[in-house]
Length: 126
Image (tube, rainbow, N blue to C red; front, top):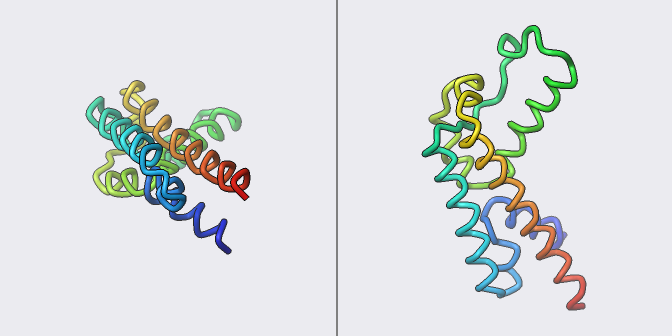
């Protein structure tokens, strides 16, 4: 149960896995990295909208899957992404601004890497 709660807390709070381990420096670095990536992605016009079926009309199955996975990766950024998700436009409007969408996706990847590293270092400490 401890690992599951650490994963959920690490996902919601960027750098939270490190905070649970009392590794303040790494927690602050990853929190800053994820929050800065989300802020820069939103400033560049990216959004956190999920693709609707009518927006995927005429797209092959593999491309539709990749678009859905990309939209899901943005939500991996945790609480900052969940806060920003309410003001999103349509999915296709955000796809026009690829740099912003890419940074939002990277924020999610950074957060997952922080959770995985925090769990790995906890196992090594035992």
